[in-house]
Structure formats: C-alpha cells, structure tokens
Image (cartoon, rainbow over the protein chains, first blue to last red):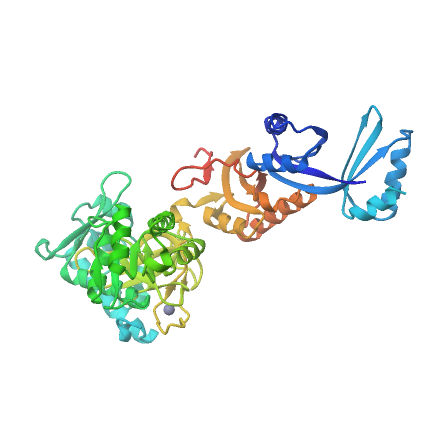
Length: 128
Length: 434
Ligand SMILES: [Zn+2]
C-alpha cells in the first residue's frame, strides 16, 4: 500500500536526532518506523508517524527542513526466508530505481518501506 | 531630463580631451602645492611633465585611506587654509577619521553632481525633497541638501532619526522625494505600513527615493518601490572623493553613471595593481579632476565593481558602474588563487535551493590550503531525496571550480545552523598562521 513518509534533513549530529524525537514526543506523536541515512556531512532521517500532518507542522515550527513523500509499505505476512529477494527482483526487473529501502520486524511479521522513482507502478507490481 | 546636457551627453572623444586637460592640470597643481604628492611622484620617478593625457594615468602612484590617516589632518590639502569653506569627516571605526576640506568651487562641483543625479531621477524645482540623511560631519545630509537647493526644489531638512516626526512632515507637507540610506527607507516604510493612521497610497506623495551611503540589493529596490510606491534610485559617493553624487543612476536603473568629467574612474587588479580590461571586475580607483581643497590622485576605494562603457539608453555618455560586489580587503589567497567572498556568494545565489547564508573556512593542513564552504538549504525546496542533495552538492562544487578556479569542499547544512552575526555579516574564517 502507498503511505506517507517524512524526510528530515539533519546536520550530522546525534544531538539533532534526539531533538526531533524530543519534539515529536512532547507533541504526543508516535514514530512507527524510522531510518537514518548519512553522507559525510549530513543525514536524512526518514520517519513514519501516526500523525504526519501534525509532525510536519511542529517540526517546521522548530526550523527543520522537512518534506513528505509517498512510499510503498509492504506487510510481509509470510515472513519466510527469501521473500525480500523476490520483491527486489520484481522491482529491478521492471527497471524502477530505488532511492531508499528499509525493513523492520514487528510482532506480526516484517515490514518493508520502499521509496522509488515510480511509486504507483512499484506499488502495483508488489501488491500482486 | 539632463541637468548639464552638454557635459552629460558629450562624445567620448571630447570627454577624453576634457579629462586629459584636467588631469594634466591637477597633477601639476598637487605636485606644486602638496609635499605628499611631490614626494610620492619623485619616489616613482614620474614628473608632472610625463602626464600628457589620461592615458598616462597609470604612471602615477596610488594612494590609500592609510595615506589620508598618516597625513591627517592637513597633509593632503592642496588649497591655502583661507580658501577652505567647509569640512566633513568620515566615520572611522578606529583611530582618526578621514577629514576632507572643500573650497567654494569644490562645493559647487559637488552640488552639481547631486543636481545631475536628482534631475536624472526626474526631480525638479517643483519637488519637495525630504533629506533624511544625517546633517553634520557626514557628507550625506548637506550633500543632498545642496543638490536639492541647486535644482531649486523645496528642501525639507529633517536629518536622520525621529521617525514619527519624519512621517508627520512627509504627510503634511507632501514630500515627493526622500533621500536617506536604503536601510532607513525600509524602516520608514515598515513604520508607515504599521501606522494605523496612514494609508500610504492616499497620504504619501513620494514618487522618488534617493538612496545611498551603503550597498543595497535589487531585492531591496523592489521591496522599497512596492512598499513606498516610488522609483528607487542609487546615488553613489565617498567622502574622500567628494560625497554623494560622484555618480547616480538614470531612469534606466541599469548601472550608476559616474560624472567622469570631475571624477576619473579606473578599475585595477587589487593584487597586480594593473588596469583590468574594460568590463572586468576589480578595485575602483578615483582621481578628482577638479578638486582644489583636498584632491585625490588614484585613490584606491577598496570597492570591487566593474565599469560599462557602452552607450546608455538615456543618452548619457558617462560610464556606468555596476553594483559594488564587495571589498578588496576581503580577498583571500587560497592555493595561490585570489578568492573574493562576494564571488562565492554570487555563485551560491545562482542556486535557488540554498538560502544565501554561507560560511567560508580556510585552513592549512599538511602545508596545503583547505577551502570549505558551508551553505544552508532553503527548507521550502528540500525534497527529502538523498541523491538529489548529493547532486546539488556536486553541481555547486563544480560551478565554484569553474568560476573560482579552485575546488571547495562544500558542506550542506540545515537552515539556520550557520551562525548569524549582528550587523555586517561575517562570512569568512581564515585559520592559517602566516
Ligand atoms: Zn543612463
């Protein structure tokens, strides 16, 4: 399914990361998933929250550079070995380029978040 | 409209002849009357007889603000004390100020320069000109005042400060022109907007703004023009050379015409001190062709700009100066290459993704200069995409390489994370020990 993910630009510092989580915590916003990708001097924090609209408003108010984008969210009910590689193969076969991807595991199975250049097509083939 | 059509539109050949005649005279005059010039010229093995036209000007030595300080107060005066009728002084941040002395002829030339500017802005004896530059040692107030008087306008000498009184008189008397610094004009405009008793389009009769004494941007012009419903024009000058009115814009608002018949401009490379080809940027240098009280010969202003000798649509033949791009004092030499922070800034401004804040750090590691440029993202244009930001970083790096000739290490930072300084923004840290 297609859901919204927030991306926050951070100077490469752990302090800034805890400020983001602090702001969200104070406002009562829950992070459902997060991942941090880093380059040599900055990092992009990608989060999915239970109230994205409010998260954008409060983080902007705190001066963060933030943008939201659509991502494909996959719930791997059958968390069997190899299921992720099947997904990846399907994407690459269709020539969709992936900007970022991360997976996490919860009590009811693994979840995968994919940010790609053609999100509609990516979603369609993965939902088959 | 021209104040002095004959001079302002004279052919370049005629102007060259006039400038040459005046340069020969001023060089002889300063050599004969001022020990400072005599000594300098002797040291450079150049005699007044070597100067036959303005083409010979590069034979003459330069002078700097330090020379004016060293010879304070009277050391560079050329006229006898009894013929000086006025003094002005520039605000020195440290030590002694720069003091200028004017004869009556000097004041007449000065007010003519201002009068030419005011006429070019479309002002005449029918206008009410509110002079909100400070009156006193600063050349702004009295300079604009004398120019306004010269065109027969009604002068409203409010001087600076007391904004509520400025606004009251502006409304009640119906000022049609405002002379002040662009930053004060902006403050005044905001005060007018916030004044519940004022409807700018109904109560304010201003049509022209005469702004100078500090650099300002095209964006400030747009803001002032829309807030005050005026045309905003630049007036340029400096105390060492005369005061405001060394030049000014015309109705085309496409460069500042310099009154070359009185103030001869050159652009030099601040390192080699050689003249640069026409149109190239470099340091602005002035020679006063008519001044009697305190002339200057090849005075280095430290202002970086360029000159455009192409014919202006307004019909004036006088050269146009571009925006002041920075100060030559700010120049850095990194890995043997001259780098002006203003150039770095203009490259950054080409990218809408950055907000214009920047910081340059130069250091030396293992006997090699490091050159780091921090820029801030503009939050509205952040798209959350890692590959996009890395591409942007590459694009800025390579644009800098092509413009500056050296490769910087670009760091993209969060909006608001580069330290802001009060007043004049500090953009450079040079950690090298020489
Ligand atoms: Zn013109």
